[in-house]
Image (tube, rainbow, N blue to C red; front, side, top):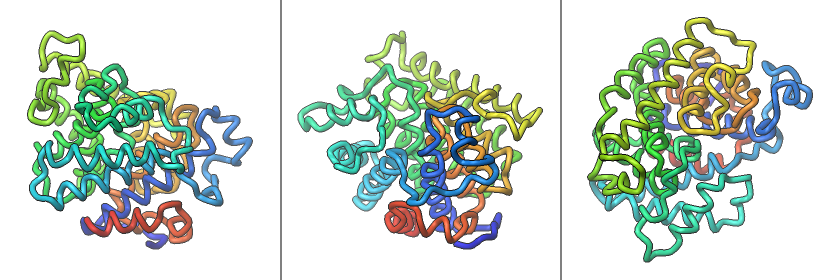
Length: 342
C-alpha cells in the first residue's frame, strides 16, 4: 500500500483496499461516536486534519466483518455456496465473536441478543433473528459478501440477506445488506462513483418484490406482513426512500456540513448505507478526506466511516490508503490475509 490512488486495480487489490478501508474508517470513527461535530472538532481538531488514533483500535464493526469473512471462506471452501453451507460456519463465527473477551467495543444489543440465542445449537437460526431490528449491525459487516469472487448475483444477494437475518431480521436490514454488498461489488468491478447512485436505484427497483425463500425460508412469517413479497418490499422501499435523500444531497453538495443532516444519523441500516455513500461520493478521489468526513459526523460515526472506507477501497484499491496508516490498524494481518485470498 502506498500514498497514491489508482482507478485500475485487481480483484485482490479491491478486496484488500475495501477491508483495510473499512477498518481504518472504523478506527477513525471509534473515538467520535456519540459526539456532535463541535465536540469532535474540539477533541480531534479540524475535521480535514483528523489523525488516525494511536493505537488504531477498531470496534465490533471490523470484528464482525472478519467473523463473516472467515465463515464465508469456510463455506466457499466446502463447495458451491448454498444456504446450508453458509449458515453453519457463519453462525459459528458470530457466536465465537459473542463469546470472545475482545468483544468489548460497545457492540449493539441486537447482535448480542441474537448471538446469545444462536449459541443454543438446538435452536433454528430463524428463532434467533431479531425480526424487529433494522440497526446497521448487519450491513456494516457485509463487505466480504460483495468482495468474494465467483458468486452469481443470486448467491450474492441471498448470502447478504441471510448473514443479516442471523441477527437482524427486519426487511430493511436484509435489503440494506443486499444493497451494500452490491455497491461494494460493482465498485470493485469498475463502476464509477458518478454512475453508482443510478445503479443502486435500478438494483433496488429490480429486487423490490423478490423474497429469497431459498435463503430465508419462512422468516417473513415472523413479521406482520400479509405475504413474503409484502415483507421484503417494505425493506426495499425504505432503501429507495433514503436513496432519494442521497440524490438530493448530491444535487447540492455541501462538503462542510454534517452529512447526517442530509441522509440520516446511521443508527439504522438504510441511513448508515446512504450516509456512508454520501461521504464517499462527496470525495471520490480523496479517500482520506472521505473517511475523515464520515468520522466527523453526529451519528454512528464508526459504522458510517467503515462503510465509506469499504466503498472507497473497493473503488480505488489497496493503494488508496497510506502505508503508515494501514500498518497501524488493529487486526491488520487478518484483514490482509482475507483480502489477498480474494
